[in-house]
Amino acid sequence: MKFYIETFGCQMNDRDSLIMTQILEQAGYGQGAGILDADVIVINTCSIRGKAEQKAYSLIGSLRKHKLANPATILIVTGCVAQQEGAAMVSRMGHVDMVLGPQAIYGLIDHLETVKGTGESLILTDQSKKFAIPPFLPDIHHSTPHKRFVTIMQGCNNFCTYCIVPFTRGREVSRSPADIIAEVQHLISLGVKEITLLGQNVNSYGLDQPADSRTSFPQLLREVAAIEGLMRLRFTTSNAKDLSPELMDCFRDLDNLCLHFHLPMQSGSNEILERMNRKYTVADYLVLVDGLRTVAPDISITTDVIVGFPNETDADFMGTMALMEQVRYDSAFSFIYSNRPPALSCDFADDISKEEKSRRLALFQKRQREITVEQHQRFIGREFDLMIEGESKMGHGQWSGRSTHNIIVNFHSGVQYKPGDMVRVVVTEGLMNSLRAELIES
Ligand code: 5AD
Ligand code: SF4
Image 1 (tube, helix red, strand yellow):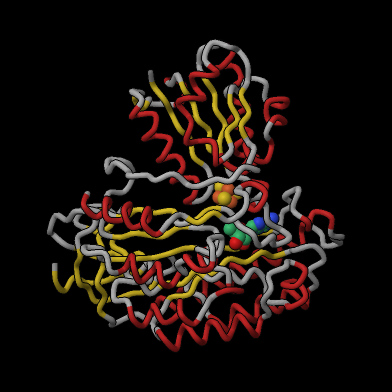
Image 2: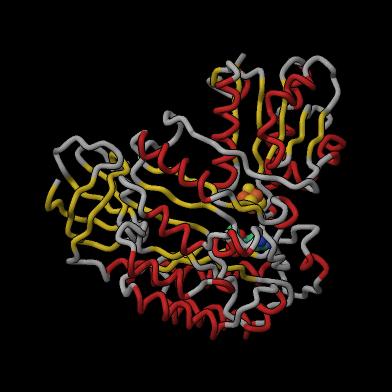
């Protein structure tokens, strides 16, 4: 029996796909060469923005004929669209056999047994019961061998008004420090060099546990950083509203904690931030940026921005442009606001035209590209330790590595490296998506 998993969305979904791959392989399934070659097809969906959801639906729709011609094929939809749609998915897409929310994937083999040969659809999206993320010891042969993501928590309690995540991933659930540490130790024993701790809102790690026995996120970072053999440690994503001084101190104290902070601003207007329910102001945000740059002057700060939030005025948007100018991000992900029912902002009045929103996005992105290049040029003449990612797309003798700032650096060398090897280079050029450098030491 063969399976095939198509994954959309964030690292949380990548990891869920990895877990399903391992569960299926342990039950004796093999990876199919392509989607039409598989007995079990999993479409792991994302619904963060309208476009992601449309992509998932169009792939599921395109499998209708294949399923009709091959009724024994089991088509499973997982991820955030599955959680959000539940039974509605099957009303719209009658050829889907199973709709599994993120908490239901661990029982995949049992669910396959339940559904096989029945012709009935199985819908498992109830998130009302208490849920704990099961322990997971990954195999190594999947995805990148030298760096891995380790989930520390899932879900979100913040209810930013534009966001679907609290509805798709449920309330915050933290894993135990012991499970997390066991997983990191296991990965290191398999040769992994870099770990990224993953959660929708890592700064609230542990807050769902009783106060007398909880470990805070900064404490967890210290415990993980101390694991022998861990060369690089990263984490994502943080909400500015609860970024603590203790977390900032980690950048001063932990040598293997990488100098990169992804700190979504979303907007540079206090009014919009309030309507987004972000619980910080532009001034609060700037204090955090200053704090981070005080403990770690070289830290790379990146962000997420939404333009065209309902009734965002020109002045609000100018606030976003001004904040970008002031912080000088190394890079930014920017999106046009899209309605994600049942998120609260879907009911907000919005008089701003699509064209105006696109104009604002283009303006933002154009200026950010210029700033990115300028920021990258600040590194010229500096020496970096790079972790090798692999051969660069540019071909012969060109290698790509990542700096502690999470920036791609390309250089030339006749040496044959493995992903995860470390080299020392000096930066010679700052470009839009990368840096160029010369090798000092292999
Ligand atoms: N519309 C546009 N962008 C969104 N994001 C989240 N929800 C929406 C939405 N409804 C963006 C935010 C978030 C990133 C992952 O996606 O900027 O930080
Ligand atoms: Fe997409 Fe958010 Fe779900 Fe990740 S958690 S797959 S970003 S909707």
